[in-house]
Image: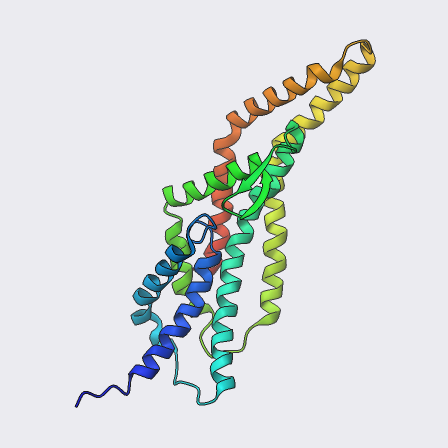
Amino acid sequence: MVNIDFLPETGFVFMLIFSRLGTMIMLMPALGEMSIPARVRLILALLITAVMMPIVSGSYGTIPTTVPGLAMSVFYEVAIGLFVGMSARIVMSSLQVAGNIIAMQMGLSFAQTVDPTQGTQGVILSTFFSMLAVTLIFATNLDHLLIAAMRDSYELFKPGQIVPVGDFSDMAVKAVSGSFRLGLQLSAPFLVFGLIFYVGIGILSRLMPQIQIFFITVPANIGFGFALLFLILGAMMTWFLQGFEQSMTVFVH
């Protein structure tokens, strides 16, 4: 007779691995975008779990014998997945910050559309930056870094340990502040452009008050803004990719 006593433990370990990796995939940029159907993301999570299981299954011990023990094991894995996935997603929000600042400087803050990468409404420039970032993440193979972070999360957060709430809080604060800082750095040329442009408008309106300054400056503001964006877009996205890579290498060893 075939011995199948190993099946309950194997199924439980698979569920725990899926709880961690599935949560990460649902939140991570590029791999878990809202524009990707939920079924596709679910299949991807199951496939990555099946691939990772032979590698990380040794990190798990025996099956807990109590219901609270089972629940705590699943809760721990989901918490780790939420933390790693949200850390990557927060970096993407820097593009929302940069897009809103740039749109405000160019006079395009009222031109809004649905951002498929975030699942929310935002300015057109933020949507453009987000979709461009997802494309570049795949083009530069940074999606491999996301998969490596899934694997190495088992070295940083071994199963069965206590959830490091204090470390999570510190890293969350640093991630949010770093995202805002990166967004300001990306939009810094447009802050300088807006300051110079609006100071020039103010001086021109005082020198020639009879000119309808609004009808002249709005097209010029948009035109100069797009010209500046065309010149520095490559440098902006390169800077973002460097910041994204640095933020994810924290989880890779």
